[in-house]
Image 1: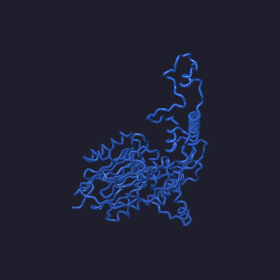
Image 2 (image 1 turned 60 degrees about the vertical axis):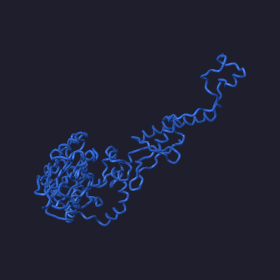
Image 3 (image 1 turned 135 degrees about the horizontal axis):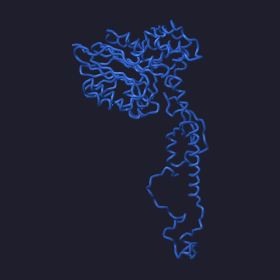
Image 4 (image 1 turned 120 degrees about the vertical axis):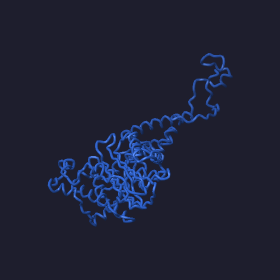
Length: 455
C-alpha cells in the first residue's frame, strides 16, 4: 500500500508584528512554508509570489522529477520578484525563504533556501532535514557558538540566501526517504528562531492538533516576536487527510486582482514614472518570463561574487557591519576597529580606525583579557570613551609598577633604625606591631585571584 500525508497547518501574525509576511501552501502532494522579508519593501508580497509559483507547479510528479519541479518553481518566483523590483524601485530589498516538500507516495523531494526549516520526528528523535542559510548557522557549523547561543546572537536575523532574483541564491534540493509513522514539521523562524531543537522535540509526541497547539504556545511563550507558520504532517498507510489551501500573506493578497494592492505598491514621490494603473499593475502580478542577464552583467557578477559573499550576498549586510565598532589589540597597542571581528569565508569584515599609544600590556590583567577578546561599542564615540577610560587605567598601572620597582622612602623608620635608638616620630617606646614592613622585607605569598584592577 502506498503512503499518504495527513497534515495540519497554521499561520498567524504573532504577538508583535503588524502584518503576516509568512505564506504557506498545503495539499496531499505538497507542503510549503515561505517567510517574506523586506518590511516596507513588501516581504509579504515576496512570500506570496513564492507560494503562488509553487502552488502552480503542484501536481503528480515522482522521484527526481520532483526536485526539478521545485527548483524551477523557485527560479520562477525569483524571476518574478526580480522583475517587480526592476519595475518598482520601492520594492528593492524584498525576498522570501522557501522550505517545502513534494510527495509521490514513496519519497519526499525537499527544497530549502533561507532559514525556515523542515524536521522529521521518528522513533522519538527529532532530526533537522534542512540547513539554515544564515550567518549564525555558519558559526554553529564551525563550532564557534552553540545552537542556544545562536538564538541570542546579535546577527541571528542575517540570512545569506533567499529567493530574491539573484542568480547565486539557489536552493538546496534533496530526496528524502520516509516510512509510515514518520512525522514532518515545516515551520518559519517564528518558531525555530526562538527555541532549540530539543525544546521543539519535547512537544512533538501526541495527536497532530495537540502538537500544533503546543508548538504555537511555545512560540507565544517566547514572546511571539515574529510571524508563526507551522505545518505538521504524518506519513501513513492509507488515504491522505488534510485541506488543500493557501495560508498567510498569500491568502490575504489577491495576486490575481492587483488593484487591491495598488496603494501599498505605489512608488514614492521622486522615485520615477509610475506604471499605468490599468496595465502596469496587471503586469506586475502576472507570471513573468525569466530575464536572462546580459554578458556584461554575468561578467560583473563573476567579479563581484567573492566580495558579495563577504556581506552575506549583499551590500546591505556589509553596510550594517560597517556601522559596528569594537576595541581590540593592534599588535602591542590598543586600537578602535570598525566592522565586526568575525570574518566571512576567511575574508575580514573590519579595519583599524584609530591606534592609540596605550600598550595592551600596560592595562590591568582583567582588561588585557577583555581587549584580547574584543570589547564591542555602540558607536565610534562610545569606543573613544572606552579607549579614554582604558588609557587612564593603563597610566595608573604604569605608576603602580614604577612605585613597586622604585619605592619612595617614607618618614616612618624601619625596624632596624628603632633598634639603634632612633626616636620614633610618634614618641612610642618600640615598634608598632601593625607597622608596614620595610621595602626590603620579603612579601608573603598569596593565592587571591587577580581583581579587575590588578596590574
